[in-house]
Image 1 (cartoon, rainbow, N blue to C red):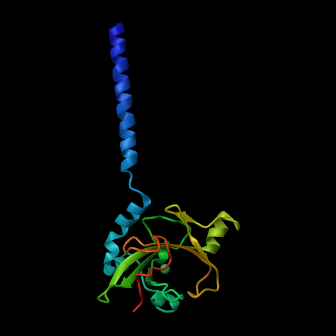
Image 2 (cartoon, rainbow, N blue to C red; image 1 turned 90 degrees about the vertical axis):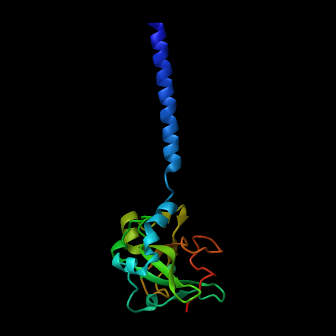
Length: 181
Ligand SMILES: [Cu+2]
């Protein structure tokens, strides 16, 4: 009887250790938000796929153009294809509101960055006038007041240069390695 109990105890302990090990393995295998964002947007290396998914270049206005830094040598972002259906107060790493394309060495447009955008008015309506800017990947969105060069209402945005290296940092707005045609 005692032996039986001991054996059960040992078995229970072994099981507990196994489960703890499995839990740790599961946690370690959990993809990061950055990995999820990259996986979810790989297909948008094809502009056709992006357009089919609802991303469009605004037909007119400043956002129709390739956006370059106003600082000399500051680089550029590129062209923004925007999915209007995603412009809400939800921040989802797998659903960037905009995809940024820039010309490569041959002048062909190539996916370079993801941009997450939330307008300030609905954000503050939902979370209060003193609400902090949205956050993603452990980074706080940058606030742009209105009026602004893009001619849109005040907004928060975070760029993630997941498809082209940014020498100044993955989450910088502009990329010195990118230029507009
Ligand atoms: Cu941008």
